[in-house]
Amino acid sequence: MRKNAPYLALALILVGLDQVSKALVEAKVGLHQSVPLIKGFFAIAPIRNKGAILGIFNASGSRLVPVALGLLAFASMLLIGAYFLKTPASEKLVRTAFAFIMTGALGNLIDRAVRGYVVDFLEMHVGRFYWPTFNVADSCITIGAVLLVLAVFIRRKPA
Image (cartoon, rainbow, N blue to C red; front, side, top):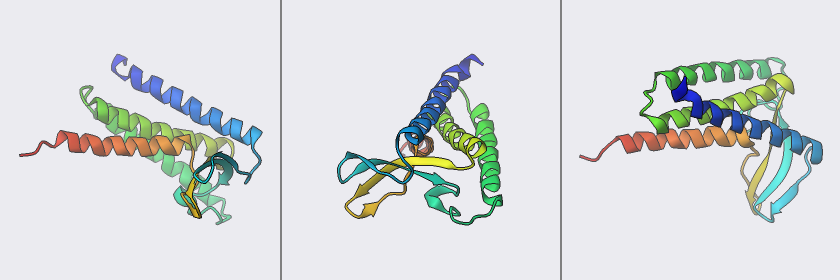
């Protein structure tokens, strides 16, 4: 258990940051409003995402979509958790990557279970070109994926 304590602490801090940021944004910024932080590049613009990544299935209206996505997120967490537990303690980068990915999945799963939708609010754009709105949990998943790729490349040593 001691070898997992730093990863658990990281996960708790990040899930807390994710949930607090979502609650603050919902309390302080109106739905579909935009508060520019860096003009022409970055804004707080909350939306309610009932779908998946990039808003896929968001407009389906089906009650099965949130349930299916919640079950998929839960199954993903279990799978990544199993890999996390099987990864040797010496593989700190891989374990950190798994912790970030599990944290992101948990943050969005909490949203689906409590709110029925995921609160996305970070909006990046250049001119008229917008990146899909995201949140802290999504950022954790992305950071975890990048760390996992780095770990693979670091592990491979040139011949």
